[in-house]
Length: 128
Image 1: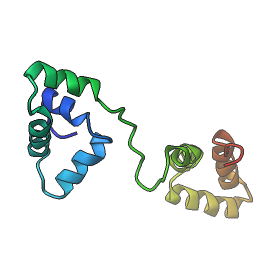
Image 2: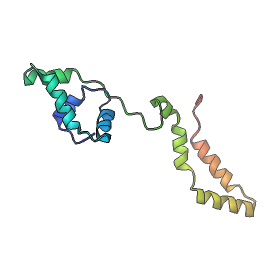
Image 3: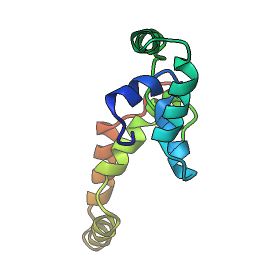
Image 4: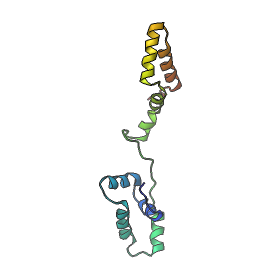
């Protein structure tokens, strides 16, 4: 999140999904601190400093973990954990091509064994 002061973070926490809100502001060239100052002004009218801060504290909204780009829900993201793990565990394409070449020359199954091991170590979860 932008370089917000503790006070600004408290005020911003009265918004839902602060991370997305701040990112949206910044992507559109708007300053999050200015937007928070406007919110502070509108919320604090007629309140003492203590009343305002107490109101912000009691009206914080739970901030959910942001859903990673490309996924609709965290459940969808979690269901693909095995695929992300496999992607980082597979040998590089160059290494795989080298294994296939040597398997062809030597009549071995090094490449198939390597791929099978990655799949066995990172199984698909049932129902996914």
